[in-house]
Amino acid sequence: MNSTAVLKVLINMKEENKTFSLEPELELLLLSITLPGKQAAAPWCSRAAAEILKKEIDWAKLRQFAVYHRVLPLFYKRLKDLDISLLPEAEMKRIKALDKENTLNNLRQAAKLHRVLDILSRGEVTAIAFKGPVLAVQAYGDLSMRTFVDLDLLVRGEDFGTVYDLLTAAGLRSSFPLDEKKKRLWVRFHRSLEFFDDTSVVDVHQQIFPGQAKTGFAGRVRQNRSTAALLSRQVPVLSAEHALLVLCLHGTKDNWSFLRYPAEIAHLIDSFPDLDWQALTADARETGSLPMLAVGLFLARQVCGLQLPAGVLRAAGLDVRSGKPAAEYLGSLLAGDSTAQPKIGKIYEVKALLKAMDSNANRAKHLIHFLFVPTPLDWAAIKLPTFLYPLYFLVRPLRLLFKLLTGRGF
Image (cartoon, rainbow, N blue to C red):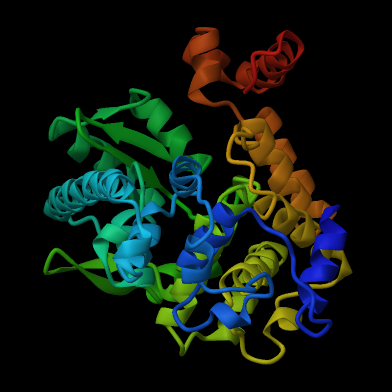
């Protein structure tokens, strides 16, 4: 069944009293990530977890699904609410051990986030945390409920040099050491930069949308920032509306390959019932991310039973143009193949963003930026003196062409 047929079946099957056949392992995982009390609103849902558990379950496969889709904490939490007699003891121990390992990692990363914010505050730099541990608190009210590997911070471009100096002086190493000339270039092109030590990776961003440097939107992101309680301390975070846009952006970049995205979108919206939908859609329109928002909301509704205010999907622009890719993504998520390699990597990310953008002008800007604006990898490929730096705008496309022809990827 192709993805368009999947979409039609999902929309109509309850009215037509039909069922959509899912692998029991995937069906059980979907039940675990659906909003509490909203399982019946999910079009694919046809039976309760207890009924599924009475059948033969491949627990190794189910565990693999949960890990692959980055929803193991949510899955484990729901398992604990079920009749223990239906759950194999050995499997529960394995899943509990994985969940405990994730919780300990999250605690360490949250403590590191506080340390980094303290370092930056000594230089009078205000950084906004997003994704990572703060999204766990915003979406689930529980630090342990997400899996993540790095910490993301948003800083002003004018503070980037100070941030670089403070973090490197504190013992963190940058992925690309920068001299003063390269710092200025880094700011000009609004690039992010990773800093790391033996336990953490801190990704410092100057903007939350690639190539997006509009003053109005950047100002609203900082003006509308909120706070979240993390380990009994308040930290600056994105507003719920902007955190939602970031989720939709990253879901798009990852080709919506993981159930974590509709789950986090659904739970974030459920945790903030007073979202400013008008401001949200206006910002999505300004940043060219309206189609990404539409797809994210659609998947959250179809997968997790999210109930949206009347007209929100239409206001977000879910039409024939964005509905077709939404159906394709939904079909892929419900295919249940956790052994397939997701289309993740720079080339797939660029293709996905180009596909999702709402105008040819935005596509052209993003493609030109990707093809011609030099990166540290281009600097490392060929060493040129400072006065010849403009030649890197030619080195960049030639290096990409070489990698494409040799199959080495981006």
